[in-house]
Length: 477
Image 1: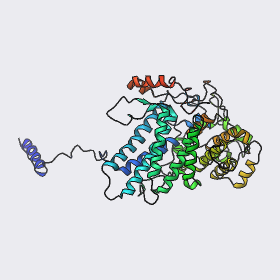
Image 2: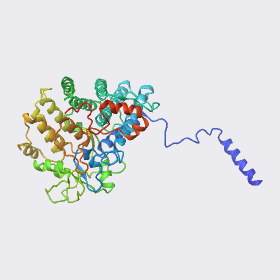
Image 3: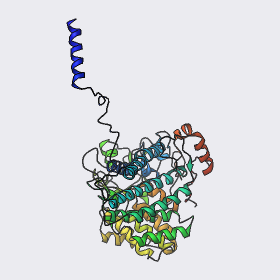
Image 4: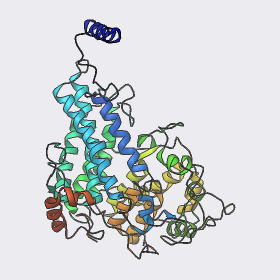
């Protein structure tokens, strides 16, 4: 009885101290309301991490572009996307972790803006969100083709329809134009460290948006010359990247969990089963490329580089490894779009007759800027460009731009793969073990066939089959 009385007394005391127990079940580590700037930061990091990652479960674009190959487990180098659900990871991360966060941030700014912000700053923040959304949507289209778009971010709709990839692109161009017009360089954007790319500098965001527009313009090059020409002209006249200081890049830190994912995937994890692919090593050896010691380790001796047969079993550490000092740096920046790419895009636009720029001058600047970015010198670039097989050739501009851009995009596998699909150079062999050619797209995640089966079936039929060799709309060669 004494024990029962004591329990009753203690319970009464608790109730007396607090009649409101509504906070007992609140998880303080999982907030239900998140500020717009936090969502924007999280989405930015999620996007850059995914574009940079070399994790075989989610980011195999350096393998797809045949920069790297594997020594032990060769499924990914043989274009097996299903075993590790690699296509599903690309899909889920970009939809859930990037686009949904950006969508929520825009909703908060529109419906419940921070009273301390000026209207101009709010509009800049909304425009920055829009630029990142356009970037992410275009990556999804370039990966899969037709995708859920108009109904995709409605959480109450578990079976969104798929939209036509060309129609999505057309809408993205309009959205990007709107964001460009909305950005006000005289006002701030996301500040206080929330903007990992430009720290709230709206002028820099304008250059990024215009440079992205230039990229999208050249995606249209083989399907709509008039549109490509107009977009390229508008983007260049409005102001694109002028140096690597303008790059859309996120600076990583020296300590986990904010290190570059490449360091996490290779160094921290202790992986040693990647080697340089013979595809790129042979191309660089043939041209005595000065970037080889920055791209690859010199584990075979100074100045000696040998690539493993792409997709083959039996590749060993007697091949050149990819563990160069530059790639092992945990603080290596993660790049979404850079000055070198922009210079190649201007050179291509000029070669196609879209703009009056000097194609050769921009080609030379693209190659030079890449060599210098990777630690080389202008003298090395001049020597490299003087070689007959490297020097700009107006009659063979597709081959020259295609090969040199592919080499320069070494640390940006997704864009290298996309550029290869459009220009069809260099020649990339079929994977040695599976015999499969380079994918023209990723197949849809298996979850779509089970959870959104009717719309998946309709989309698969519309694109000509849910196959790796079904091209996206702009890949017509």
